Structures are given as structure tokens and as C-alpha cells.
Amino acid sequence: MKNLIKGICLLLTFSFTIMEGKAQDYFQEEYPKVWERTTAYSRTIAESMPEQLYNFKVYQDGMSFKEQQLHIVGNISFLCRHITGEYKNFYSRDEIKGLSKKQVLQISDVAFSYVADLIESTKPSVLSQKVMFKGTEMTKMNIFYLIRSHAIHHLGQSIIYLRMNDIEAPEYVGW
Image (cartoon, rainbow, N blue to C red; front, side, top):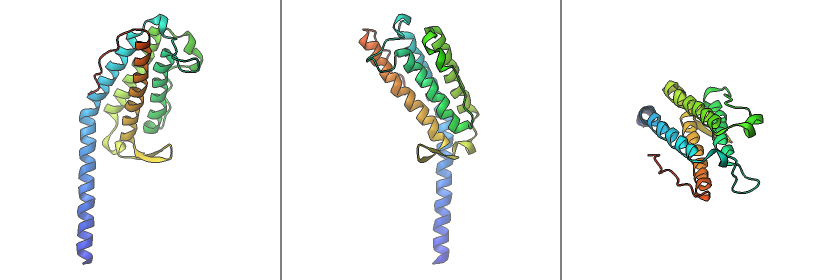
């Protein structure tokens, strides 16, 4: 009976190891393409808003359109730190008001490219490493999913800003 239980445990461990490897393979094969589409969608939304409306706010205490775009970038810094252990700062918060649309687009391009490079360079063994995030243990691979989820959340808000200004929102291309 002991040998049977040991055998079942060994088989389960082996099965979970294979499934984890397949998930990592899938991530490394598919996620770069998903991130590329997210990057293009983000850029299209940011380009759609005229520069004179970059400071538009839906309500007084909310973020402006510009701040929405830079908040996505700030979150990239915050979440990537959980993958790399280093905080990469793409802009100074003190400069936000003076940043032009072109500068915001450049900052976003650099941040989104940083994530793309990080996706490509992160080894499978690192993807499966566990980190604590807001009291929850998760893999570093899951942090990449959080980066995209957060970006899409704020891009959705940005679409509302466009529509409130009678600007046609770009078609979603996240698949």
C-alpha cells in the first residue's frame, strides 16, 4: 500500500511538472504576440486623443487622459519590479503637467518595449518563481498577466474619455 501511495504521489508530481512546463511554453510562445497587440492598441488609443484634450478629466478629482496613460506606465514600473527586483522609472511625476502628447507617447513606447523585452528575456525557471503580491502568492508569469490586465482596464477608461469628446474609439484588437 505504501508503494502504491508513493507511486501515485510521484505520478501526480510528474504530471504537475509537465503541465507547468506546458504553461510556460505556451506563455513564451503566445504572450509576446498578445503583448504586441496590447501595445499597438494602447498606442492607437493614445494617438486618438487630440493633444489639446490630453488634460481632459471626466470628473474634477479623477485622472486626466494624460494621467491615465502615464498611470499605465507607472504600473508597469511597479509590477515589473516584482519580476526583476528592480524599479525602472520611465518618467518623473513632477514633470507630468508639462509633458506633451508626443512625450507621453514616447514614454509609453519605452515602457511597453521594456515589457516586451522582459517577456522575451525571462527564462522559464524565473516565470515559475513565486512572489508575494498584495498578500497573495503568485508566479512571476502571473505578474505579466496583471500588467496586461491593468493596462486594458485603464485603456477602457481612456475610451470613455474619447467618447465623451465625440472621438471615435479604435476597434479592440486584444485577441
